[in-house]
Length: 173
Image (cartoon, rainbow, N blue to C red; front, side, top):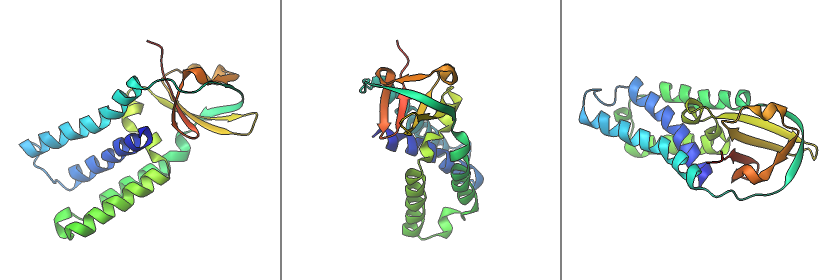
């Protein structure tokens, strides 16, 4: 569920770029205001879900290597944005074809885990780290906690599972 929300939130940025580029709405119109409110809601929803999640894992791993993971996801994110800019205005497509194109783009987005490169989370200060453990397992962590480079042991008591190898660090209240 969290992975889907993250991907939907990230994908909404590509849709925003498309809407602005193709001038789908007049900026001073009520339709544009409604679109912006929906966009903001889609981008706030994953944060609300994160705040309500219970910490669900326990265990420890020794860290062998840790580094920011943005470079792995930026090309796929920008590829989808380039496709959004290269599409014609939606009225030039049959409605069904346009929906199919958008669904295929979202599926590619979701399958390549591009949602982890979420501009909203980035603006809120979250950083994505790739961690390689001594057990050669690769783990992604999204966190606002910046001291991960100094950590030698990863403790799962602080992490919420997003999917099998991706976790969100939950700050203590």
